[in-house]
Every structure is written in structure tokens, then in C-alpha cells.
Length: 250
Image 1 (cartoon, rainbow, N blue to C red):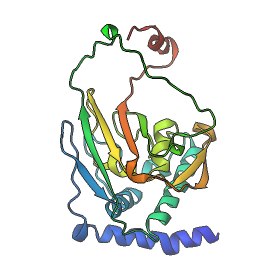
Image 2: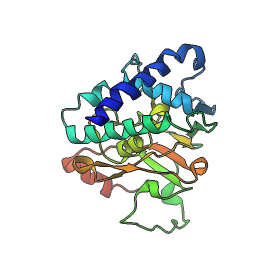
Image 3: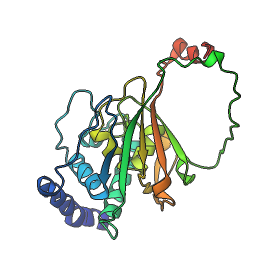
Image 4: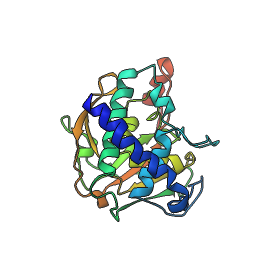
């Protein structure tokens, strides 16, 4: 009850104030369109403002852009447990973002990286693969100052504002500034990746999909050197077609 009172009496009015102030202070937010070779920047306050608009479901949907509004998350009947946990993560983000270092000069930058060659001849390449290590007891976010790969939907964020609760959706829910980037980024082309620098992870979590759970506050070390690389993963349908990914020669 106390949390609900604080949410409606304190947090919601502050989010409303951010939205009301948008035209005067934050009208320089630009869209990143397919093929755009420029580097974009969102201040911390701009990220929070964009997400406040999403929270109140005020965006008009545009063709070739991700779903931008929280309304689908609030009505995610397919996986209500995961939706509730993601909402807890977003509320935690808003509380952190609106406290203390809210006016931080840190910003999130992102750009599109396009493959120089449409078809890399992997079969003809004789260079060895790098050594791979598997860490069973650690999360992606626990590796500071590292490049984190987002096996993404072509619409950045996938189902984070809906019923999705797997790798991409969890990454974006615990790091909501990634969602702000998704709001302004058109879908990826097949030869594009989107590189995002300095997005801050705010929440801990455990579980996956139906067992996902918000696990409290996360303090992100080396934020400025953290990079997320979003690539559009190839989709293999369930059933017999799923086996194709293990049969094709790369």
C-alpha cells in the first residue's frame, strides 16, 4: 500500500511534469532511420522523458518503428507474471532516474553499423575462431566494460513492451535507456547492426521467461565503456524447420 501511494502521489506527477515540459526543452530528439550513418545522442533526461511518453502511451505508431507504448505491456495477458516483473523494473528505473544524479551529463550514444560486404565468404575463411568461455552462474550485465550482444528482433527491443521475456526483452527491461533508443530507431535492415554506448543497467533479475523476477537494484560499474551491439537474429520457426539451423553450412 505504501509503494502504491508513493507511486501515484510522487512518481506519476513527476513523470507528468516531464511530459508537459517536452516541447520547451527536448524538441531536438531525432529519429534514426534505416541507412542513417550519423551518430545520435540522447541525454539522460531525454531518455527519461521519452520513456515517460511511452509510459503514458502517448506516441503515435509509425510504420517500420517498434511498438512504443506501455499500453501493450499493461495488457499483456499471455504472460502476466513476466509483464508485472518488467513493470517493476521500469518503475525502479524511473525512481532512480528522477533522483540524485538526474541531471547527470552522461548521455547515451548510438549509431548504425552496416556490413561492408553483403555476403561474407565464411566457408573460404581459414582463420580460427576465438576461444569461447561459458559462465553458468553469471548474467550478461554482470560483465562490466564489455560488449554485450543483443540477439535482437529487427524492431529494437522486440517484445519488451509486450509479453516477451527472453534475452532481448530482459536486457532492455533491466536497462531501460535501451528502450528509449528503440523508440526513436527505425527497424534494422538485414545488413545493419545498431551499436549503443553508455546505457545504464538499473535492475537485477533472475529467472527467464515464465520465471523472470525483478531482484532489486543494480549498480552499474564502467557505464561509459559499456557497449550493446544489437543484431537481427535469424528466425527459425518451431517444429521441423527449427532443425534447419543445425543443418545449414555456414
